[in-house]
Length: 372
Image 1 (cartoon, rainbow, N blue to C red):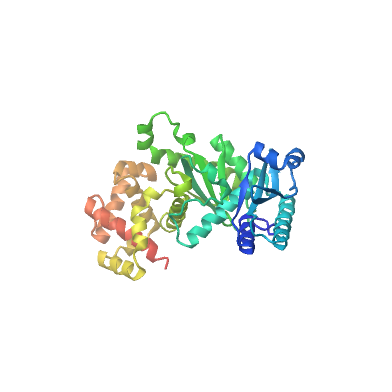
Image 2: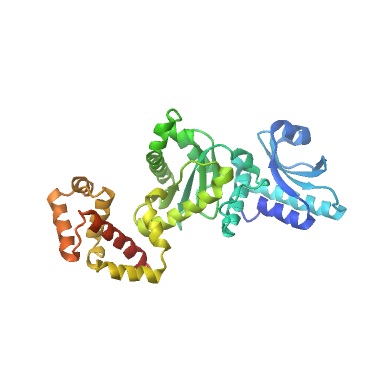
């Protein structure tokens, strides 16, 4: 968020600390907005005067398409001084918000959710249900698919919330929820039906991973053409965000972190393809080095980029010689020569399951230990 404007969630927390009363930020429907803030919905845009309603003080922050977003505070026991401070803080925030233009496309509500998610994960509360004070909670009860997008562009200007929202809507052809997290990190929620079609549930479940992988590739291609530079994209299976979003975000962040270590050169990372990597990453560093030494000396092979690429492709193609040769654009006999060379240097024949499993483990241990 622009440094000029205090974040909406931070504002709510400050007011709650100041008054000791329950507070919240809520986007009201058109009819409710009109009944409480009629003049504001007619003129549109900037915040209007605070009002009291059913024991609460409501301070409008801004209006968009007839819907007013306001902060509310319980009135009972509030002193005149506290009321004055609440009005002052919220009013100044509304003025700054209007100046920065962050009201576009529901950015304030999305940033509030992003801050809440970050705070939960900082406290290791990955099983938290979305809190009632989060304005977007009412939109998080339907099944949605979460994507995590992280940019590595250190010099290019960051894509704006509004521009990225527009781009994502053109891809998904419908409403999405875009949640800014930290700098250059975005959580995207898309309706499950947009990816699966929703016609055949059994077929959906069987092909869920493939469909999500295809969606990631298409999305990556679209953003790369508009954004440029390097960025990472991860996706998880459909969930009901109100209950599972914090855990999904933790999983997606871990997935991208693992992808950066074990899938160097790749920018799309799928959590169901990183089970062994997750296991290896959980092993203490000293124990990793011990295991690598006990398995055998594979350093000459693993340090050779061509051989490492050959092995990675071989395992990716389920140890199928013909398919691996096609993937590498080499003759089948060239691949067999390389595999024989690996056997001569290490004693491991990766065409047999047992040796392939050992070499795969050695590769993962080598990748994570050599970066320490």
